[in-house]
Amino acid sequence: FQLPTTVSSHHNPVLQPNECSSTLFQTIAAPASVVWALVSDFENPQRYKPFVRSCRIIDGQANQVGCLRRVDVASGLPASYSIERLEILDHDQRIFGFSIVGGDHRLSNYRSIMSLHPNGGNETVVVETYVIDAAEANTKEETCAFVDTIVKLNLRTLSRVAEDLAGKAQQQV
Ligand code: A8S
Image 1 (cartoon, rainbow, N blue to C red):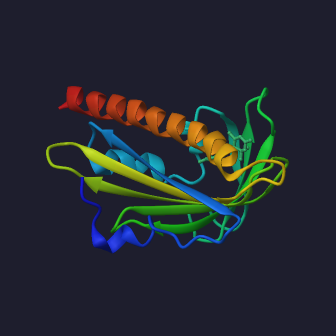
Image 2 (image 1 turned 180 degrees about the horizontal axis):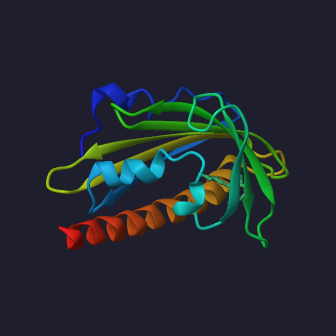
């Protein structure tokens, strides 16, 4: 898979010495429109993020850049909630970005960008790149390993939910 040059800067961030970053890929057997409907719904991350218990917009208008959501996560995690800002929502290029601006967790200065790429047939490649400050008591490797685990699980769940939706849509034809 060749990343289009139009989005390559999003996935090749310039890092400060205390930051770490990772890029994850997920191929999904569903059309980009179906995947995009899930990814771009800033108000409803629980549709594909298994740790999210509930979410509501707490400032600004839903799905307008700059709006804030409060995400409450499942018990058993090292945090209970997160405040997140919508940074990029580009429906033409299918690019979505958000940052974490508050909460009771230890993720500092987290931001993530996802881009969707139709891959022939009815397949979509999702590329997600995040940048985060290395947590105070942890190394960059530990911080990224923790975040990788969460993001990979989200992407795998996104794949399952989107494929499920695409399959159902086909049955209705
Ligand atoms: C995302 C990505 C991340 C979410 C993390 C990294 C989080 O929701 C969870 C556990 C935490 O300790 C931090 O795309 C926080 O949502 C599952 C509450 C922010």
